[in-house]
Image 1 (cartoon, rainbow, N blue to C red):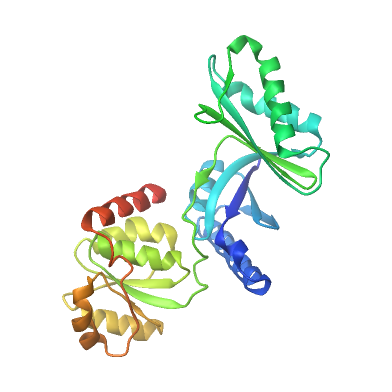
Image 2: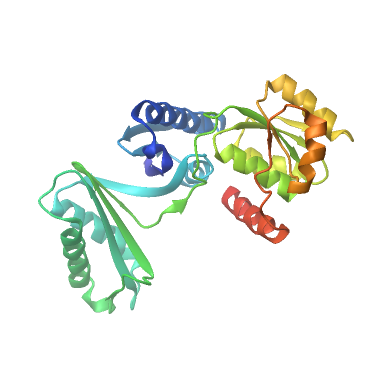
Length: 296
């Protein structure tokens, strides 16, 4: 049986209608391409502000979706009609295996469209139904620190129920903001490349030091077509050649503020980026570890 994922995206929704449509179409293409490259079939549909992806392999599908730039979170969902009895029945079935004796639970409801109930009224109705059905389990409603969260999103005439919300990288869809090349020789360079990708920039990398491992094992998870070029002892030359080949609009460097004067000498009129310039080494390490966890 196919599994359905509700895919949320964030700042795309803040763009003007023409830009939003362009970014949404790019996000959809990126998702479909990611599944195609992984030889995993999927179907995709959308409504205002969400995408829905259906696939036969839930574990692989979730892993792919949470590494697509532009995606803020992903939930595997049960889809039912927006009639209260249907929502209640499906939620009771979904909650049964996860509500152990003594569990503290919360029902989180969101509603889009016109319905004969408010989000708060629906949450109270569903919470009461759970309390009655599983009265022998000593359950407690806890909206602050629940051990089980039940997510209910009512969207028009369809409702989506889930138990989790897995974070994605967020940002903008890869490819909506031009081309860059980045120097990746350690975690600072790798994080810089990642942050520019997150802003929608298609980024090729020149690697040195630990860079090949970071590029192949982490960055490629977010950009399957990532072009990787070894520095071979001449990082500036390799970056320049790759920038010309890629017709890149800028260079991403892991340099501090005091490194800019020499970088200007090296690169002339090239546009330079150093997105980690304000981060300490400890902050870089912490943020890069978070990226690695997301990739895995």
